[in-house]
Structures are given as structure tokens and as C-alpha cells.
Length: 99
Image (cartoon, rainbow, N blue to C red; front, side, top):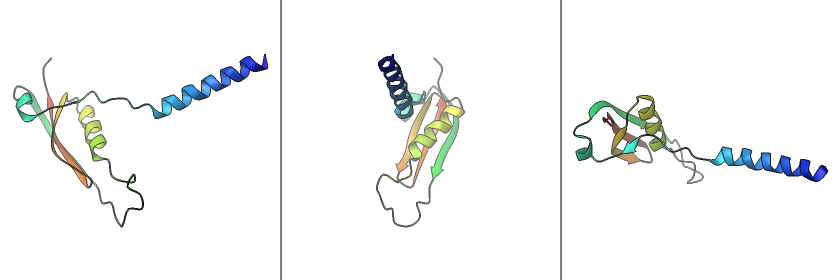
């Protein structure tokens, strides 16, 4: 009985940890400008960052790409075209394309 309980607890912990590290892909597709000619322009989205003083670790950098993609999803856009994607900021135009 104790072995079964331990197995269930282990399975729950593994499930919880897997859920924490899973990365849900964005529903917004990245496209080139020529691919969105027939689409409706929604907005130009930009995210900037002041990284401040010297960064101690390279992993502690600004992730503007994710922020731009999240904002594009909130605007119900289907495609984005990157204008700039740098460590200090990202810019993309958001479009809604018909099915």
C-alpha cells in the first residue's frame, strides 16, 4: 500500500514539474512581408528594455520577442513580420490574414 502511495506521489510531482517547464507555442505565425500582402494590418508592436548596468549572467537578458508575440496574440493577429529583434528591444508589424 505504501509503495502505491509513493508511486502516485512521484507521478503527481513529475506531472507538476512537466507542466511548469512546458512551453506553449504561440498561435501567431512569423512571416515575410510579401506573404502578408493580402492581410489586414493591425498594429506595429514594440517592446523596449533598459537593461541597466553590466549584466552578470548572459541568461539575464531581455526577451522582447516573447513579449511582442504575446501582445500580437492579444490583438488577435495571425501573423507578424519582424522589423527588428535585438537584445535591447523588438519590433514587429501585426496582421490578420483570412483563412
